[in-house]
Amino acid sequence: MLFNSYEFIFLFLPFTFILYFYLLGKRLILGAKIFLVIASLFFYGYWNFIYVPLILLSIFVNYAVGLSLVNHNKIKINSKTILIFGIAFNLILLGYFKYTDFLLENFNGIFGSDVPLPHIVLPLGISFFTFTQIAFLVDAYRGEAKEYSLVHYMLFVTYFPHLLAGPILHHKDMMPQFASKFNWVKNYKNIALGLFIFSIGLFKKVVIADTFAVWANNGFDNAQILTLIEAWATSLSYTFQLYFDFSGYCDMAIGASLLFNIKLPINFNSPYKALDIQDFWRRWHITLSRFLRDYLYIPLGGNRGGYWRTYRNLLATFILGGLWHGAGWTFIFWGFMHGVALVIHRIWKSLNLKLPKIIAWFITFNFINIAWVFFRAKEWEDAIKVLKGMCGLSGIVLPSFLSNKLTFLSKFGVEFGSLFADIQGNRYTIILIFLSFLLTLCFKNSMHLLNTKLNYKIMFLSSLIFSYSILSLSKISEFLYFNF
Figure 1 (cartoon, rainbow, N blue to C red):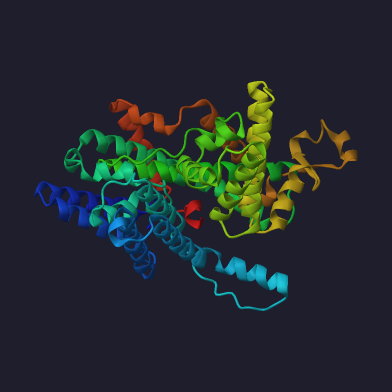
Figure 2 (cartoon, rainbow, N blue to C red):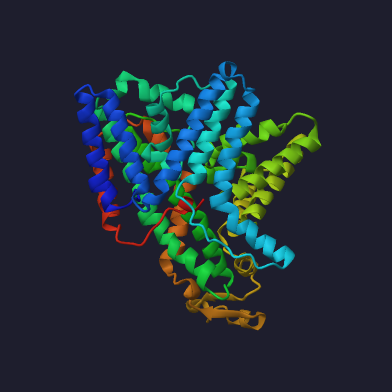
């Protein structure tokens, strides 16, 4: 079930909210939480119920492993052995569903064999609920996970606002909220604020991201060649589509969760304002960055052991981070690019060198934009096509109205005509790209609005953007991060 669907907005969310607080009002606390678990499982299984047993298996195994980690002295099994078993179970489950086809395809390519690919359908959200539970096991091993109610644990994993695309949650952050009696009564400030944040996220998704999606999809998937301006429009369209798509989802998740008095972690902090690649990863998909740092980079050794080991750990972390995003060499190369960029940044910092802010931003943003090309491309050829166009190697086309004034450029191979014919763009393509730069660079992040004092003007604005977004729901749409 999509957040940007009539079923979710007008049926599932209000029904779940009303019945949850009705049960709480009758002092049926446990019943209300069980209902929220059932509602979340219904939300998860709405598209394909066959994967509900899978997530339940994952939950029960990880819960049992977590309890074993707490009680390892009683069962006389080394806690490290239990942890390794739990992590291995999660990675095998994730690996089977996400990477089987990729591994077999490469096996066939290397050895010239013809092993048939099973074409396993990726269960929605498996990467997110797997990482969430790995973090729980590590926290239990470290003694940082203190509360072990099965109902609370199931709610922690299945809680519908975060289930399909994050944010990645921490057990210690969520359990006190589920247990707090102050969260068992309706909070009208949270309701108003939640609806406001949800409306902003909905607008980001269905109005901005889905508009960019048309141009990005045509450029990457349909166009045979891309001229200079078309290629840049394609890459920037995807750069902004991805941001407004995923940050819009997270806004909707945070807003929907606030209705239930549960605060999810902030996942974005104006990442395109970053002045270096390290700053970008402190702002982009913050919960994933934290997970990679705490549960991969630091266990690998972090920055202990000298420069070369630090660089090795950075590269390994981001190559694996790229692989987590998708089973493909383009994802791995994207992760490698970011790992190399972070190594270069470390070296640059060690030399105490600095760039003017505008130049630092320009280099950082363009690196991110170029790296997204590999992230988006389904095949290497698609990435090369876009990059070739961005370098002007597939021709340059300028607007027709400039032909009289710039005729002399024709001798250099410049043509005049429609700027965006191959990506089905128009003058609004440039306008929306320009407005997106303004939104991401000159305005505060939507998460700053969590501390806003609501008034009639803000509520009117919320109603306006919500209504406009609802009128745009007829488009075919999906969240990009559901694929990861």
